[in-house]
Length: 105
Length: 119
Image 1 (tube, each protein chain N blue to C red):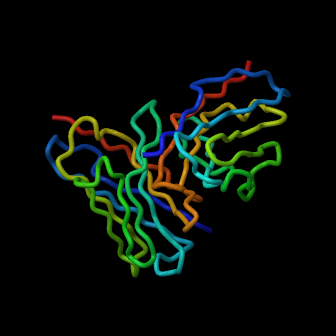
Image 2: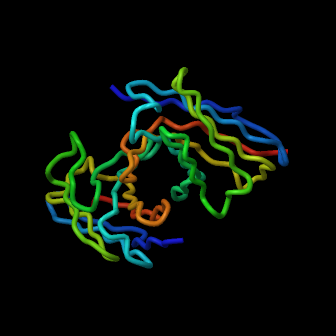
């Protein structure tokens, strides 16, 4: 299985730039996708194939990376971005990262 | 507009078989490249992919659960199904179905259905 590792939590102030990382245990090419999950809600697709913005997602969100190292960037962060962010790979089966909980200061 | 909705038993006992239904609209599982996946999430924890089924009836399972899972579909009624045999308390989770395309991301998700395994 391809294991995806994310930092458990981050805290930032509104207006700042935040980067959330996801590291794969082996190369997944650019088959990395990002989701946002707010409490009590289902996950929502933000970024597909590493850097493509999903429909309706604000341009404040962006993604980058290839191989084993990927980043989700939010710039600037808004209060509504408080959520848990998950990465998911589709190069070798399907696996999710453990999630990064983003809190606003 | 793509929508998906999961339904399940709510609560069941250890060793029973869990049967889940995903009823969807806005796409067809007979269309080339379309698929439905099942994902679960224990309360307060991360997401675990379970299985996918594709327009051509190809099926893929999480290797760690493969011998307990069966995914199927009813194209004419826009439904997908998942069965998990021999459940125990570790299977307690919210179960989601989601539309998936060939490149592999889950573009649309249902609201989830909570399943509790308890004696």
